[in-house]
Length: 305
Image (cartoon, rainbow, N blue to C red; front, side, top):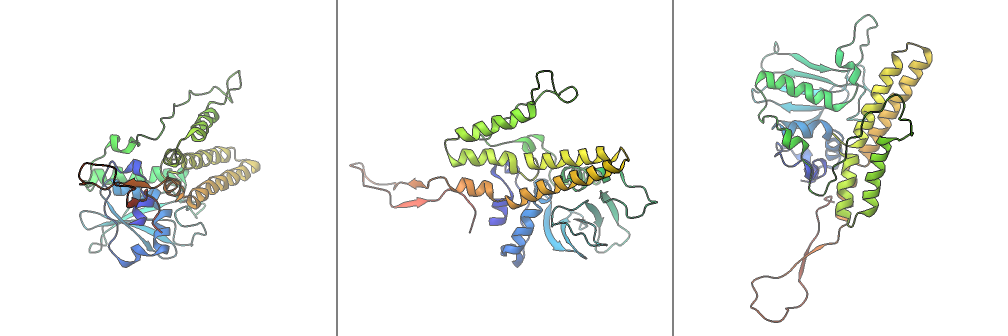
């Protein structure tokens, strides 16, 4: 399935994923586009054995997650008033647990949407905004308490990478704005990754490096988005007018980074598909001179068109 191939990089397939939804929309381009935009939510949950689907709520698209006790999760942006943010990149997430036959079973697992009521305090998770990782961690924690996680947590599976992907050295913390020799260790790490890309001998190797930047859950763009969100919250703490202006500028930067990741969500598979076709030779022939060129080729994995 194209939706599965593109939204689930090879490096994350150590853990089997829960199956895709079983309905006719799965094969349509519009549904697959929505699936890709929510992959940073659905992929880690499917790694835990949870089946996910994309549906339209009251005014925006939501992720619906089926649970073993026939209850379900609804994960999405605020529905009232409608959000003007693109699907999969809201200003905040709301996750609730509900049951079709038991209206009393209603629970808010996570809510990072700022309160519309000036007199009402925000929930603690509001500081995370539209970041996906705290949302997924909160959901996993609560479902683990309820005994509703089909697949136990596996740190090995979560941190596994393919053999062709680089292992980046974690830079040492800096004091203040930098060391005395003005070394920018975080920039140097990215520069080293760029050097690896320049030296890559195949598009497959290049795709593995590109995956380090574009992975929707743990890639550099997602991490930069979280960094700018944290910087935005720090700017707002000053309670000065320019602090609030800077807060919104930094929030816009985080949204721009995530939008860039959405625009390039197929880039890794497209890069990998540029590898030359792998030839398959005929087998089962009697010993003797070479029978000539092979008669079939198999293309390297890539995006299903």
